Length: 115
Image (cartoon, helix red, strand yellow):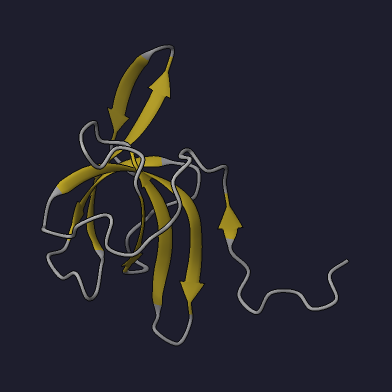
């Protein structure tokens, strides 16, 4: 058992990239991207959720690791892949909308509405 458990427990899933988290590698310009959520944690004083994610959209940002917050009303879970819309504020990176959840199955990608 841990001597001192974490103050705010977070859920962590397997990382899907060999790259490390560095601020500024994922630009926040209001774009839509596909992300895989690796870690999520509730930040109680700020009343927001913070997520570490890997970009899954093909292109120059593929497999970059980013960090963003989201309103608690936005339903995002660790270990899942989503098509999301980001805000336009580099100083306050935020996931503003979940468009669809992406489900991989047998080589084909199927999308469903988030629960």
